[in-house]
Image (cartoon, rainbow, N blue to C red):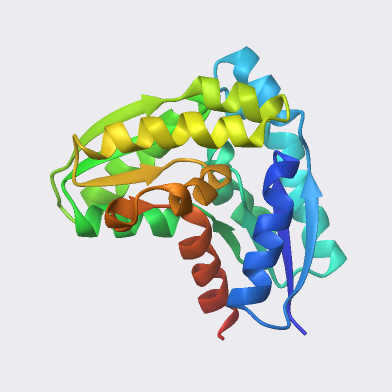
Length: 218
């Protein structure tokens, strides 16, 4: 049985990603490492992931020692630590939003980026620009930070988070061809949007988990 370690910066993503893994990779054994001190620290230090790197890399090393066959970085705010961590372990480390970014620049030139945290927005912008450069593609980016949604989610108001975010997403999609959701925690809101526009949103969990499956050779 293959083992997947998922490293989270919020407990909100634990159960959805575990359920998604079971759906996409039947029989996979999933274990989670959660450090919910990371996002508050990034909010305070302006998104300086260098301050986070030592302990995040330790989590990757621990995950390998526990027996992970593949490790998934579930947080886009620290997505850029993925490449750095790969040099410390022998098992693959997957960045959850990388497949989403590749798909986005393949499908559209006018991209919206929705985030509920400023610390997630900037890494996502850099990732999209990097993937566009890889394809020699020209893109335009329209970013939106819906910080009220994150405040509500942090206070335990999941319904309020979804309502505020859904309204913002509906407005944003009218200005662009495709909207990228910068955080895995935003993915569930797509199902609450009008059916006719859902295909114009990309969320990282489904594509990220498909990448994990491919890495495992399923």
